Image 1 (cartoon, rainbow, N blue to C red):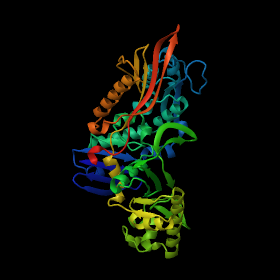
Image 2 (image 1 turned 90 degrees about the horizontal axis):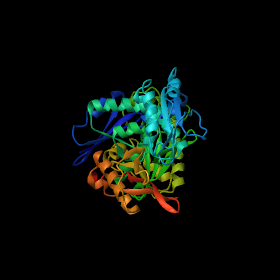
Image 3 (image 1 turned 90 degrees about the vertical axis):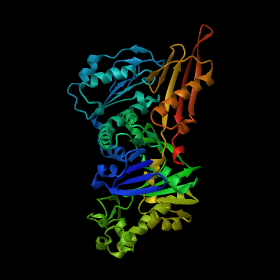
Image 4 (image 1 turned 30 degrees about the vertical axis):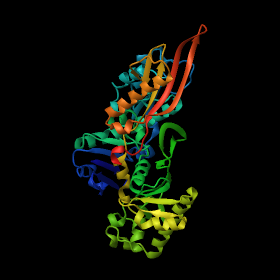
Length: 481
């Protein structure tokens, strides 16, 4: 059995896939526990949530205290003593008293710790962490080495964002654990990872909804090349699929690159709960009137025009002209964005897809399809996704050192690059299977990056240094097909 949950702004969607697909919607005001209790024990549970995204949007970045360990000669704000070389050697220790002095009288919300070459040796970050942990809880401290990639400015920024949302994510994990102790989260690329790995890098959850929609739309429609239109309560997301997979892009927040990839999507600030005042507004002020809210919304406008959604009689506060204008504004806005993609087929998902997709397709001169269970396609996508991970690997033959995302792993002599890749592949496969991936899902380990060069001393090769990124790519689990 596969179960998926998508925690949205208005509702929590549930999908249970066994011999057939069953989907449910639970209003968020009924609580997450009620949604979790609808899922029987056993099987696999995957959860997608927008809470990390909301925390980034609404929080205050100044509340994060950064401790950077750049090394001698490098000027970074919030820098402290200590350095790891590009080979992973400790060339300057930290000063514990310096860290303690920084922490005394500190009132920041959380702490981010980042060392320039910590992805090749994480010991200095961990030493700083041990000191900081006397002042802050684990849920308030993030380190950069577990992110893996070398790009130091982007890793600092990602670590600060991790620190910002870690407490919220940890609280959510505890809440879910009380009802379902064994579960996965869906990442921003549509893969599944364990809660422990999420706490190491909470930003992996950022903007995961388009990823679950992409997987769900493909699973339900089997259309390889299309544009998915997901009509939510707050926004409408356009997600292109090519060869059955979404397109990925680097997340940029506050004008700075992060080290997180996410499914490429165009967000339109109108959804079913967008309120109508003098016109359709690009924000929500609660639920639609037909679902107990106080202000009329796009959903209420559809009711005025003949739909029977929720308690549709409460929508009659809205006059017909205002309803028509609001619907036309929504359709024109979405159709204009759709035409930029020039798709051959539109796949509609979300609760209002049945009511709006045909008009969007007509205005954008294309074909629209709303598959069965489209209203909960995001939860379906969470349910059928597979365990995924990326591992950054550094190997130094002279030091006999191998690190995976900053952590030391057993070094093994290999006679050439091909044998080294084979050894690293088995390590990544073993990690993924230990985290619950079925053997069929980890047969194809992809090499995303590979760089190797010789260290020459005295006219002879004294060492070989290799960096590579191996991945279990995100997608739909073989077991769900």
